[in-house]
Image (cartoon, rainbow, N blue to C red; front, top):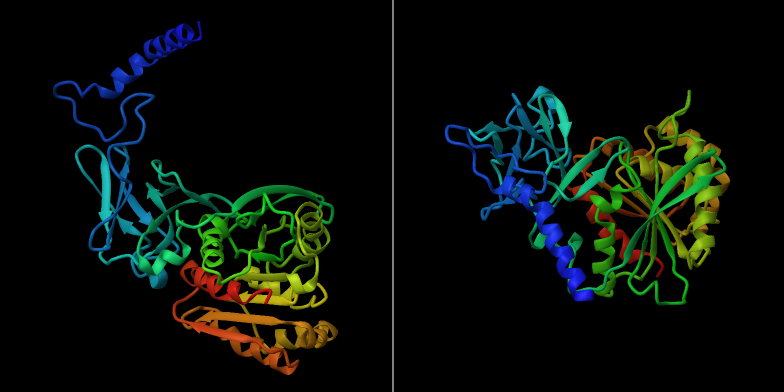
Length: 399
C-alpha cells in the first residue's frame, strides 16, 4: 500500500509540474528574440554564470536584465579592480548588453584570491545578484559575495578536510536599550558533544556593517576552523555583536555609551548564562575593526577586569586632544591595564585613511606602559586586511 501511495503521489506531482516544465523548455517562437530570462516558474538557475573565475585570474560578471538601460558592477572591497569612485573617477565597471538582454563585463586585471562583496547597479538601483546564493548583510541592505580561489586565500576558505564549528544567530532582549538585539556566535568543532568550558573572543564589525559581517564576508568561522585544525589557535567561542545601536539625537556613532551599556550589561551576561564559557578575564578577549576598533578602545581597553586580551584593527584615537581626554577619563583603568593585559594587538594598513591615528594611540599606550604588538601591513581599510589581522591575532590568544 505504501508503494502504491508513493507511485500515485509521484504521478500526481509529475502531472502538476508538467506545464511548468514544458514552459521552461519551450524555445522562443519563430521570429521572437531569444531572452536570457529563465522560462517558466520552475525554470531553476539561469544557464549563465553570474560570477565566473577565468583561468588567467580575471573575473567575469553577468546579469540578465533585458529592459535595463544601464548596468554596472560595484564593490567596496577591491578598488584596484573595481573602481570605487575616489577622486571623481568612475564607480564600478560598466557592463555591455547582448541581444538576449544579458549584461556582462570582465575585469581588466586578475583578482587576488580572497572573498569580496559586490552588487549590480541597474539603472541607478543597487541590486544583489539575482542568481546568487551567498549574501552579506549591512546595517541596511545586503551585498552579494564571491570568492576567488587560490593558495593566498586558503586560510579563509572552507576546507572539507578539517572539522568545522557552528555559527548560530541569537536574539536577546537588551534591557539597557529597551530593544531586541541580535548577535552571531561561533562555537568550535566538538563543542556540541563536549562538556568543558571555552574562552571567548568578542569580535565587532565596522561602521555600515552588521553582526552578520564577520562570518558572511570576514569568514571568521573558516579562519578559526583552519587555525584550530592546524594546532595554531586554541578552540574558542567567538561572539559577534551588532556594533550599531538605535539612532538617537546627539549620539556619536563611535563614542557613545549605548553600545557599551548593551555589551557589558546585557550581551556578556547573556552569553555566560547560555554557553559553556570560562567567565574570567584571562579567558576573555575583545577585538574589532574600524568602528568596532573604536568600541574596543572605549569598552575593552578600559575594562582590564573583564578582558586580558585586546585587538584593535584599523582604528585609533583621532588626535592628541582626543587622546588626552581619553587618558584623563580612563586613567585608573589604563594604569591597571598595564599590569593586567596579556596582549594588546594593534594593526593598521599603510594606506589606511586612518593611519594618522596610529601615533596618538601608540603614544597613549606607551604613556601607561601598556606593552603592545603593532602590525603595520600594506593595503588600506578593507576586509582583505581584516581577515589577515584576525588570522594573526587569534593564535596569540589565551596562551
